[in-house]
Length: 485
Image (cartoon, rainbow, N blue to C red):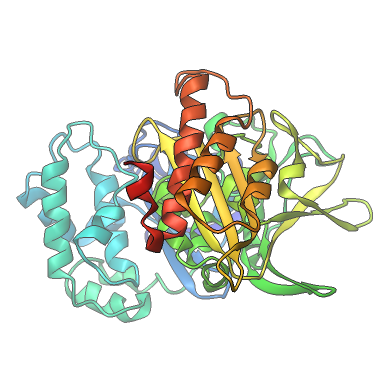
């Protein structure tokens, strides 16, 4: 379905009627004729189509992220700007390109534009640079020539050369221009995104819209994998075009204090939020377990929930955190809420009535100890075979005052392990308690066997992940020494 869209691609401003369900990748290559953005997997996995996406964040500040253009709808570009490899190379080779060439990291060259854009994005990011953080930036990029050693050397060279960059994009831009990382005419536009033609029509995600032709899309990282070529009559609404949809804020409901997350809050937003880090100290360490940086930059928590996968990593985390789903009725606007674990009625079935929309998520505001564990066929960037999350609140006497335990991959829906929670409450952490917890976890759910592991393997994982939670939550007890003796 066509509508008027205004966005900037490198230095060119586009304001025209475009099919907003179509992919940015196809526009970049086939309409704008910028062939440096490659089509690889078309599923957001390989990074060959990576571009830099700029726009205003929930607080109004301009932010830039590396994203996969094969999971980015044109309709989501209204009021935003894109940079491709051609935009960076307008004045010749940049230091990032030179590092890739000098270290022999280009090889066949197919993946090189994506790597260069990811590394450039790391230099633009306001965080401190070191060899580890800059390699994290390219975790979503695959090299089919297996040239990772040379890519690593190029990245480390850049981290060393640009370690003196100040924090914040506005402070870094003049230096990046002076040192030829970004062409000056392009940098002059990067803090001034174009005004959108119209704000997003919806600050929510929905499953049962009144008009079945309307599709509500969060970040597109689930939708476009299933629908890489949407039908032309599709009428998508993009939930993150309304700024309040990405807000994370404190709210009160009677005597209860909550952290409320808008329907377009992304995985990146979640892990970076001071409010989330306040209630679950150290939770940001688990961001690396969740997809790749380009996907975390776009994937919304609500979109992930309504996709209704029984193995979704964020769902297990949110259940353990005590999340509730806030649902809005389309006809009367009335709100109702439900515990997240009760929102899943069966495989890919949700407690949503016709016309209802997920408006937000709410997490209790009290501080807890939190642990997430995941086992997959690959160490990173893979769907879990089993994932589990455990949150506990400790009493003054050292006993466990409250516990919430969640698991994915062992049933048709994400599970809350009530029996395991009951076992923990009132007990003091110990190796014996960890073993009891493992036995209960082993007996939980009804796991099937598939390509990722047999039913028995999943049960054994549940047991050992229970031990891992105890080791991580109470490191001072050194429980691993007894459990693994």
